[in-house]
Image 1: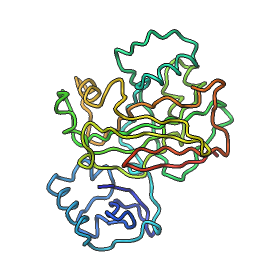
Image 2: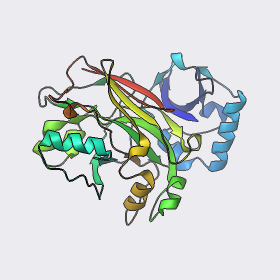
Image 3: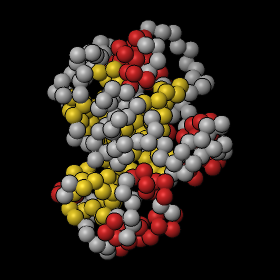
Length: 295
């Protein structure tokens, strides 16, 4: 299923996109009494999920409305915790990153780089990306696969990792490069307001064979910049969930952004950073595309 958060008649609601892709199936009008996507992730049982899927597949149900008549928000507009992110999780991006930083690289990434990203509110498809030009000048884009944890995960074995995955979404991990390098850590440079476009949907995990092998792309002003596959992770999803859950419980609703492939702005010579008016598109096969303009 493709799950969404949306606004209709001034109310923020949760629902699903029907199989034809043209209509929204509302949860509450069909007896699924959940107010937010976090509620759905934390509280909807497997039995309810199966019933919901069957009802959507049948084409039945109440209150369906055209996608064109609602405002689709980020699927999780207000994450309950900071997003957990991976840096340097594609080898070609590792190469371009050290080139930009003028560092030596031995070709080895034995251990993942983890950092967190503050999200006061995740941006939706179509929302502007604030340039924050008063404090930064090296604005960059990063198309990433977002993994949403569906139940509390602690000491998870690699072979069981996908049992804890609720679904997947598209994330653009917008970054202020000079803040990232200036502070010698990444939190501030990743966390400015408007730096987390997400969506347009959560694709539930049952829709994808695990591990996901999906094309991931980004464009800037129509120019293809990133073009890779999610099976090229240095550290894959089972590795990430296994390692992070050792001694640290990943609560239901946790979002993990799994890293970006080569082709970000800093990777070009000279760099191609974003400026006001640029349009960035990030797309992952089977999930969808988010398009955002730099303000």
